[in-house]
Length: 318
Ligand code: SAH
Ligand code: AVI
Image (cartoon, rainbow, N blue to C red):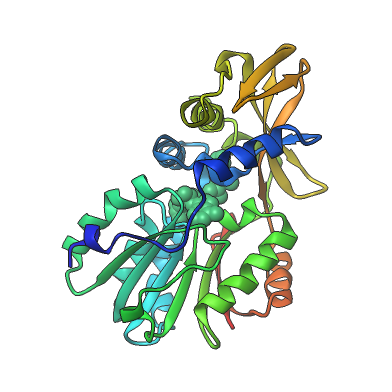
């Protein structure tokens, strides 16, 4: 199968009108916010990949280590001939480890909002694993999306690595887990990668790297708004700020206006005070217990936890 011919949109992921409405809605709110899903255009996805290589950003290395050690035990839980559905697949690097671990996986469905980036690595995956049906799906994973009919009868296993679940507020995370339960079906296995609460210095460094790549990733959101909505953000007049809020157990990421200024976005004028921020992302950190409690509240039962003490991959059953 040619994966380009299979490349589909699972549902409308939002037009430029939706993007504009979300941006204006966020920038006219108090405090100002922007939805983190808009980080991931082609440039943003490439910057995220660079983040995963940074010495300070431990989550990717930790999760890959856990997957390399434990993939055979995880794969032993897969029903034969299943479809592996990854939510927010990015480069699909972690799915490759699971797909190579011996289970008879019939199909890999890679769901991601970053359509241009999604296409890049899957052709190679299909060449490497010719028995596997590879199906990219450009969709917002928080909304219903259509599984291709020819794969619809396969038993499903869900995969949600990267601690992307940490980018939701806890109530949104529970809603997402319920929604994923509907997508995956009764009795399904779900592997969810979750970053653990840890030493605050380690957390702080992971989001304030010396090379400034996380700052570029954060600022790319404004660059994207300039590119796609014809806005006039002066990127030199905004600074990256990230800190750990222990009470809420989350890293907060902001863009700080370094001076009083006005920005024009899609016909709206947005005023910034000096030091006023746009809250661009939360990255919640969980303990094993606090995540299991959340999963149980959303209809999932914990069956196993694979952890190196810094990061945890939870196996859940619906
Ligand atoms: N799974 C990969 C990538 C994690 S980065 C890993 O573990 O390394 C988060 C990924 O989720 C990005 O590829 C981003 O494009 C995607 N994403 C973020 N919000 C999304 C949404 N609402 N719907 C679909 N994909 C989303
Ligand atoms: C994708 N997500 C889990 C990353 C995180 O750690 O919250 C995104 C990221 N933001 C800054 N660095 C990485």
